[in-house]
Length: 156
Image (cartoon, rainbow, N blue to C red; front, side):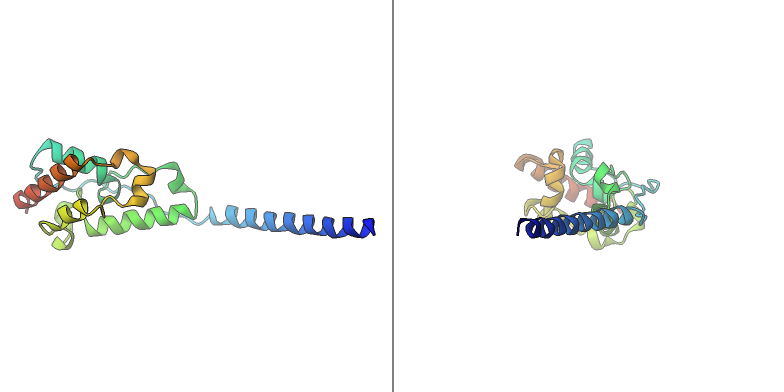
């Protein structure tokens, strides 16, 4: 009887090792799927109302909403790279502070950006978890929201 238990236990170990090997192979295989992590050239920026507004926007918004993205190390590891790249490219298509004249006005409605900042929708929580420097105090949120509204009023 003891030898039978060993064989069963050995079979489970082999099965677990095979499963681990397949998972490892799959993880390594998906690393070969290329994900472009690009920062195109800066074309134009808005007429910022103040250096403070630009600095706050750079700290809290530019990683996703500009061509100045700081791609962290985990943005190069699939499948996380797929999510990061998707989020950045989608955010840039909505609002890009460094291709100001290249985007339509859909993402630049006065008050809309301020509302998203006040409501805590921007920057999103999943971004803040990995980028605590982007957290804004209530005073900074107000300054950024008001500054963005003034910037929109001054920019074509």
